[in-house]
Length: 220
Image (cartoon, rainbow, N blue to C red; front, top):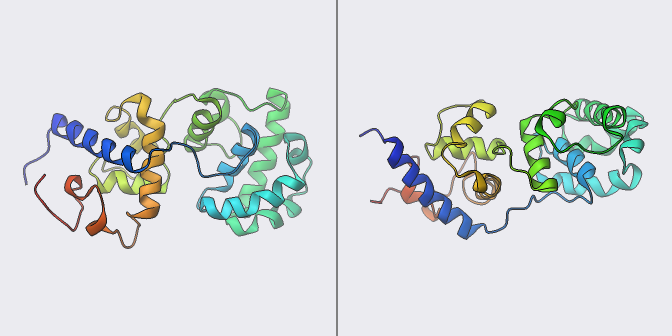
């Protein structure tokens, strides 16, 4: 098969973006939250966990602990019991408490608005920082790469990388910056609805004509 040129890849990517944005017009996270700090906690909890599960956990969690001051003083065992069903609860509880303490010590309990400052908080990687910056503050610093974005980006031929940071670096020049945040959300929703890890629904996928991994091949 003829290797795709950079220009052909950009044209195909733009076609995919148009379809995705029409199918998934909303660019907000599915996580429920009331302020930037609650969003930060929810995103930390969402690692290796569905947003649906996180949204089942956070109402009780935020009724017990709702501010950095509350979480900073939380007993780790109690916090673990409240977030147990999200998985990896030992590390998540430790990171959330550490994150709250760091916010109080370094930022007067206020969630910072820069990638550099967010990245210094316990439990916060680029994915979490990108979600918080884009969702809470409208600042687009990068592409959110979760498991869905990583999987679909590979299947669509946008990258061959497995590392989230390397995938992000491949996507950033391919997708217009103003569309980075929406693009990530659209891929995430498409991954949940159509392009699952084990059984992608290629026959009903709106992207199949432009997807090199599709089981349903037609001429573009």
